[in-house]
Image (cartoon, rainbow over the protein chains, first blue to last red):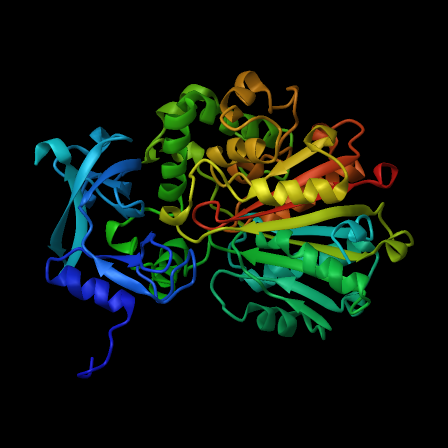
Length: 128
Length: 391
């Protein structure tokens, strides 16, 4: 990116994650939070989207265990998390067997580095 | 012009399939062309009569060009919208408008895939699609799509409404029992609930039998204005309505995982047809996964939200049950070459013609077809069809 050039929302989001910071958007026109990051608000179509740091807490909205043989890396969790800010994202819940992740479970976000890029994963809140 | 004004103005006059199950050595255009020719001949028309074309494909972004060239057509109306497997149901509304306006006179809807036997097969195709149509907010978590997205939907439905694993299995077993009555169906071995429950797990709560087949296959059908349809070879099957709902792309952006756009498409389609779910003799639901049948039954109004599980219990949607649903065996047991919408439509037409042999629904006069598309029931297209005596 050239000096003075504004990063697009997607690029800004990933750049922050790569530095270990989890940011989501907040629309100052309609007051709603927005995820995934966009150039306009999908609720009121305003361009007035600010970056905010979410609390990082949320609830498992749904969960599945993707079945893989151990020699193929083993089974893993894929979950949908409702952040307390009112937005939903796909992620995974770690620190417990994938089948033990339950709908309604309270979780907390962590930014990890995976394959050279920042990535948001979640842990059970009571394990923190 | 409103949707109501189009009621019964357009008819499906020809249907054809080719290469269903396995078509080794055949390209997708080769089987598509065979299905197209069969549909046109079934109608009593010739390829020269076709001056409208609807087609879509998961690999080629400009697929109508491939088909126009291959079939030697010069269409006045081309529709290549791809909203997933629902597309070949959703192609009806633009076709109805074009036909009613006199822009064209005979529209061919056609599709073909050789995903099962092609050397550039399913694994390579999925990788190529993920590269060209990346989802940076889901890709890193490696959902095994489409199963994982529908599994998330099923898990939420089970949590919210108490839908059981066994009820999902009922859908798979009913589809198999219909397939056993259909000589064209690909999977006809006996299947019981315990076998479904104990099969290889794919993405919880789904086992292999909750997921549609991976087959080759091509399907085509032809539409004309009703006045012309009456002079053609087959008993015309009239389109009373078609409506489509498109709500999202990825499962994380599906507002309520238990409600699909069928709620919207079904409401509009039934209103324009002047009929309701209880008036339907035949029900063809795009069953990409067992949960799809349950969701569609609820969203189309066959039962209340959350009651789809109990609705399908005790063989209720199997042959001999209270509701004949997916009489060809569906995507779960008949055929599923990536996108199934045209096949669901063709089965409804065959039922209304009364040509379904052992699986024929007695005195079938009305049918609803519900297409499903995308990785997470993202698009749904609903059509209400009728034979002449139910117009």
